Image (cartoon, rainbow, N blue to C red; front, side, top):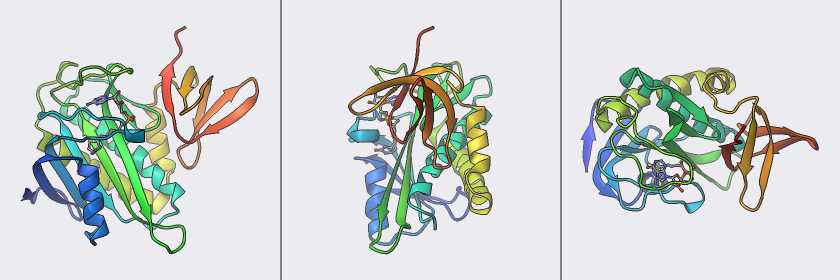
Length: 252
Ligand code: BT5
């Protein structure tokens, strides 16, 4: 475990070589009172997680980091921060890999050259009091050097898309700077600016998409994002609001 002074305040790095999951460690630290701004990173994870308990392949060479935040917001509004993280990853990666086209895929994926290069896992816990989360943990996995072996949605790494090899610590510093700036604007102005930045990079917007839910698959036009980041899907039966799922393009 090691510390690093390079992150802008209030962010503070706790780095590990090997850990189960940086999200689990950030949550453990949050429960024993760690402050807003702690960032847990690891060279590799042995139990990296995606959403719904899915596995996140985490070999050395890529970025694995989790931000611990203590925002004063409605629980539902915390989901907005996942979009801020995806935008900040895309912005940071664009600076370090200028030739690669970075886009956002609902809800919080980042694509490089049309393939998944980064994912975000947002988890929060409530206190007993009111609708304000006790803390929010935002876990980010970014494939810098090593793409995963097999995935249902095509995946890649920045290096595979032609970028030079970027050190995880370099991307982490750039990401945290971008995220810190987005977070400050979010506190002052709400979701609007993040939503605009995310929509400007969104794949599938205005197009026919397939949305896979836990027990169902829907098809429709990806119309918009709502105030809490839910996907608005238009179809013959009207407009439907989707809070969680996976989006796939529909072959023309
Ligand atoms: C995500 O889940 O995309 C969120 C991933 C978050 C990972 C970070 S790493 C740091 C922090 N600590 C953790 O334990 N997690 C966070 P989801 O949308 O459910 O995507 C998971 C799916 O992506 C898997 O089922 C695979 O199909 C695919 N996948 C697995 N590893 C991948 C990788 N390295 N790159 C791209 N896709 C991957």
